[in-house]
Amino acid sequence: MVKVAEWVVLAYQQIVTRQGLHKALQKPEVLIKNSNAFIHDTASRISIPNLIGDIDISVALVKHPTRTVRIKQLTDDISSHQLKEALLFCRSGINGFFLGASSSNAYVEFESEEAKERALAKHFLQVSGKQLSIFRVDAPRTTVVRILNINPQCRSNVLTICKSFGKLWRMKLRRDTIADVYFKIDEWPNMLNILNSLNGLEADGSRWVAQPASIFPPIILQALWNHPDERRHVITSMQRFLKKLERPTDTAELNNLAARVCGDSL
Image 1 (cartoon, one colour):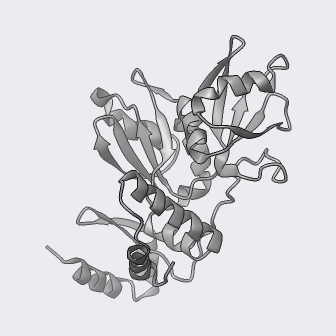
Image 2 (cartoon, one colour):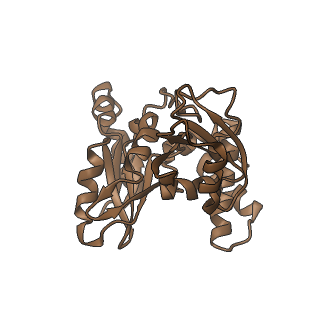
């Protein structure tokens, strides 16, 4: 078995020529001992998608895209008060409500990101006998999608379905009904569309819930870390994850991790 350090040396020897570099970059993601490894040209730069991924939104109106959802199929007889009542299950106040370019679209800003995720998990609202759909507007900071409510008898269908929306790297099962689907890094600009397409999808008798996984592929993590606002998002995600695990946030530990992974402190 070739150790990782030895593999890196061998890889370097293979790509010292321009032809070797070209071949390596044709397959930028590889698997080494069940871990992801990424090969990329250090001269290249990854473009971080705009946080507001919905091109129909007025940027001047949306102040907090990570707490905002888009509701479609509105009709003139549905009031904002009715929508607020229908969203009570989110257990959060609503900071703002406004119509989009089309009167059939509305945008709702919640007081918390958790409330937004509850709305997205439900995906559908019943208001005045009509079914409205709820969509994400913030572009995810990862290319890994966590899918919940998978039919455990039909797990093999997950990859087939996901392949119809974008190029895949692999799938990792977390539980019988939960899987993390890793899309290729070059799908990052398209991840908002992929998430909205998979969320609420009916598959094998189950309705999926699709969310951005709390997993940052190394190349994306490095790109985010080099931008102050995006770095804050990464740190907040780490702190939120530790809170879910009921572990105290150790700033020194996070600093050490940042130094090891990114060569920089918080």
